[in-house]
Structures are given as C-alpha cells and as structure tokens.
Length: 328
Image 1 (tube, rainbow, N blue to C red):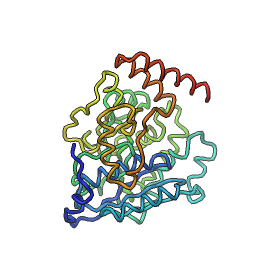
Image 2: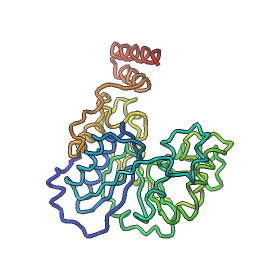
Image 3: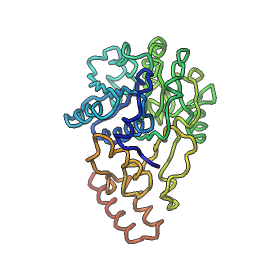
Image 4: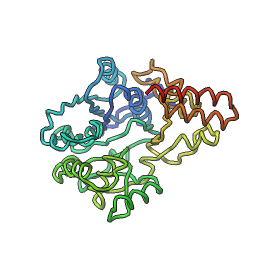
C-alpha cells in the first residue's frame, strides 16, 4: 500500500468542507500509536481539514510539542484537553469507590468536554489505521441519532448479547463511535453508562463498552463493518502468515488484538505499513517495538517462533517470559 509524502498530501487543494472533528483518549505510552492513526487519516483524505482532540490526564511536554507540530505539517487543528477529575464533579460519586481505572472514564466525558465546540465528533481507538476516504462520515446527517456505531465481530456479538441479556440482538465495538453531542448529553448517556458499569450484576468483561451497549441497546444507528474492520494479527501469526489479508473496502482497520502494528518483532506487513505512516508524522523519529515488552507478548512470541520451526528461539523467549513473570 503506497503512502503519499507530506508534499503530495498538501498539493491537493482544500475541499471547502467544514473541519471534521476526531477525538482520541490516550496516555503518554500511546501517542506514537495515535500519531500513526492520525497520519493515515490525513494521508488518505487529502483536501479535508481535520480537528483532532486528544483527551488525557497527563501528557509530557515532548508529546505536546509533537502534537502541535501537526498543525505546521498538515491542514489540521489540534486540541489537547488535559483532564482534571475535579472539573467533573457531577460524575465524582460514580468514581469515588470504583475499582475501574480513569482510562474508562476518559472516553465517556468526550461529549461533556466538547460541548459547545462541535455538535458531532468521531471517537477512535489509537490502534486503528485509515485505509480509505471518510467522506461518507463527513457528509453524514446524524442529527436524529445519539450515536452511530459498528457491530462487533459476530462471535463476540452473540456472546455479549447473551451475557448482558440485551433485548435487541446487537452489540457494537467501542473503538469507533460517531457521537451526536447534544443528543448524547440530553439523554444523559454518560451518567447512565457509569451507573450501568458500577451497578450491573452481570460480568462486565469489556467494561465501558459493555455498559455503553446496555444503555444504547436499540437506540444506536449501525454502519457497515468497513468503518471498524477488526483485524487480529494473532490469527495470521499463528499460521505463519505475514502479509496483510485483503480488507476489501474497509475505511478503518482496527488492530484490536494483543499484537499491534508497531510490534516490529512480529515481522508482519502491518508493521511496515504503520512505519510508513509514522514516518510522515511528528513521531517519525520514534522506533517501533523491536522486542516483546510484556509477559503476554513474550509468551506469544515464543509460540510464534515454535510454529515457525525455530524451537531454540522459542525456548529463549519462553525463558525470558518466565523470568519476567517471576520478577513481577
């Protein structure tokens, strides 16, 4: 897949459409990943102006500088929203005695933070790459919708519908959510979601995603899977496949599995593609992960090596996995 240069992207005249707002919720460890996502969106949508909102509790000065640098490279505006829980007193009682992390809370306050800034915003996970134009979303009328979502993988959908006892046979993946901010706020979706998250008697395996599905069941508009094409690199690596499978007309390819496209140690083609996008972003000087970084990755890599017919390599990585696990 060819990735245009910065000069080629900027050579396309602006299309005259309003800026399209996209939000991310990341911490310092995910700015590199988000940089690849943003670069892929800009590269595949020359002429379209974007406003990228980043919600976080703490961001290093270096990442703040890189984020702002996007504005001098492309036709984009960036807004960093540093969150302080004290600013969200209306939600404080939900979190006071919760075992859930603050990261769950971040995505749910996007409408509150952006109220008055824009009426609609596309939330994206930062393990997504854009493969095609988003014009359909830019032009979409969502004035009658609370949220526009994409169904999860069929197996996950059926299991979660049953586990959560949902009345409607639908369940969406929370990695892509197009939000109508005024309607979301008017319907109190965030407080209702937090209430479902903290008070449900069922197993909330996917935390806020499960809770959002409970609250929005039968009330969200569903789009084609091309808007959140779920791609699990583990499936490829388990059978020694290192080339990206065809994704058809997918717009957003979501690498939702445990192996990400910045895991260079996997040697999968997705890493080469991610590297190309990262190279046209302010994070171009950052290396990909050359080795597994945690116990889960170490154990998977050991398995991949064994299936590639490299038993000594497999053993080496399994020993490293055992040592890291014991050190925790």
